[in-house]
Length: 315
Image 1 (cartoon, rainbow, N blue to C red):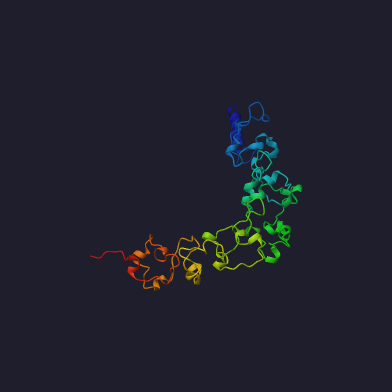
Image 2: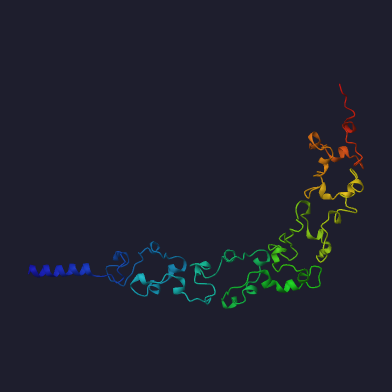
């Protein structure tokens, strides 16, 4: 009798040790976490899915377990979006659904940052543009790769300047609109500072609006880079009387005395040749050209101390 009981107990223990979980060999969770003692089919919500590599967030919290766990071996459950959800974009956006969507809703809320990551930030008018104007297949939920250069979309605008003072094709303007136009502006007239003007650097006082030199916006006329082409006639700088610029100083170019920063920043580059008179105290900030060159006085200024310092009393 006792021998029979020992045999039964041995078999029960052996079976218990060798029994495999229907959830897979790697599923090491206490049965009581999910099951009740009354029956195996009643499942209680005791398993913390957030401790797994697939936490339940958003809409996944409300999904029936068996919809994802189609078999009792839980390790076989799919974890990639595209493995459970049909690709309505037909492969045009790749398989990384989370780049645009989240578990709360399919509605895309981060359009700005998505374009930023794609290398085409939505600025200026592009912020309010109709998506379908660029993504022509968007109505089919397909987002094929499209060109991001200005010319691809604004070819009509480029050639629409034909016959105008700023005829882009005739003038050979770059098809990269951003070289001239301000991409953060709200209209084409928002001209930026991107045009390569290195042949005549727009620095200092020359950092002007384009139309101040290109009169009436006519860019077909080739402008002279000589100072007097702009700074002459009725210009106050060219008609200065103290010292006079229209007589003795007229033989020099503006750049020999002035810089592009300001008219007041004057340094005659050839002055050192005149007996090095422009040295010592004569180079101090309080010494101005007009201290010696009064009115129309130029080369007739006598380079002697007494010319300016004749009132000094010597002991």
